[in-house]
Image (tube, rainbow, N blue to C red; front, side):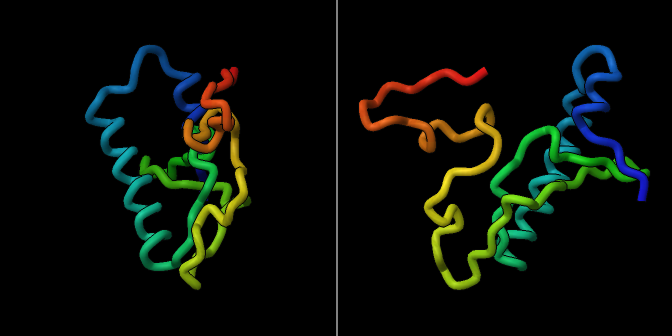
Length: 105
């Protein structure tokens, strides 16, 4: 299957992606993630533009499930660990006990 990484697609085009297209790609990814959560009980844990691929019909899909975890047994899907790519972390995962956030580049 031929795929194109989202990040390469954006870097090869000029200007912003039209909102209608962005919404379609976002919907594709969220529907896939919803299916992974509800049907297969899998949490991706590393959602970022580098992990979005397009197929030959321009359907967006998530890739790189290296940090994915199963939560079939009703455990916390985060499993108590922090993983993924730092600039894409949710703020609540990197907030130190003193309440001051640190910057990521």
